[in-house]
Length: 297
Image 1: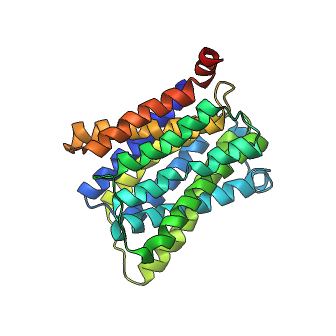
Image 2: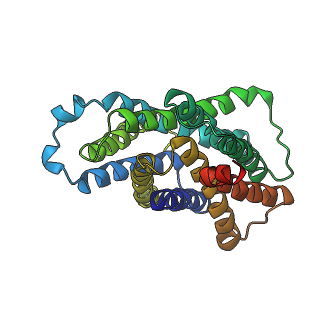
């Protein structure tokens, strides 16, 4: 459980840092690329098996296909989220991003044959409503239908990234190669992002500033630890992935909502409070599925 809590805390820290990006006019693309390089180098520095690291071994490792897929999806999805936030709005983009948990939950239930308890499924369905209401101001979403493809791509991209991470944890990862897997994933994302940056720089759309690098480094630290603790949580024998994904999402909703009130003086609507309440209930149902089942059966 401690790894889930730490995942929620570090993930929430990332979202809070993104809020400061907006306040300090940080260039998202530049900072996110620096962030991925920072997280990648941090993974190498903290790896307990550094003597095992060599480029040849890494390129021939069993996890490289998954690391490549996740790294590419990380940078593409992030750019889609940034674009969606600007063109569609943060509420709809957030809903699409967080609703993507449905994909890894279904993967856990049907690909990895995890328990299909009615209480857990009810909790997951309740989590969907929690995401919706916590992310909207009046419980309604409206957007230009020409951006529907962006919403779908965010939903699919984040969902596939999370599902691939679960697949890697299940099939190829262990204590000896976790560090190089993390490093490979982050550096692949950074290199792919660099291609975007080079293209936009050639077009004259970017000017490099020191603050973008500094904020990227700040973001990269919790980014590394989020993935580190998340993989540890997925490896736990206590909870299944179909429980972990919604618990993390709901926990992040609660922490960021409280942080928004304290740090940024944000005002929550009635639908937001309803979403937070539903999130608490959903976490309880998903976390204590076995205990609740014992009461009724």
